[in-house]
Length: 119
Image (cartoon, rainbow, N blue to C red; front, side, top):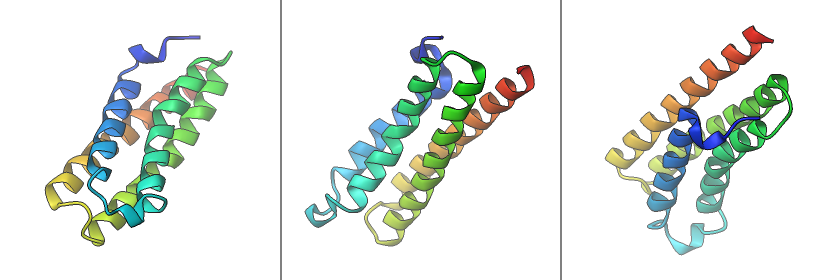
């Protein structure tokens, strides 16, 4: 068991979540239960799954939660694109959030690889 707050991938995904919440605050009210909710849920679930995996008993279980986080990150990747295509995200906001998301996905992948090689 390790403290998730010390993991750079958790820190980066937490910052991404804060950015997504900030960006979606300007979305139209009619999207509150649609795209806004979906983006916030998928994004916040990435660091939440990292945290939950860190509370488990083995590297294998941690890797399983990291895989779930990777799937959620991919879901967010689509939601960001959809929000941009709908004109809800300005190009610069979309570009920054997408860049941060790709970095989180790379970090997750590297962490998963490290865990699976060591087990």
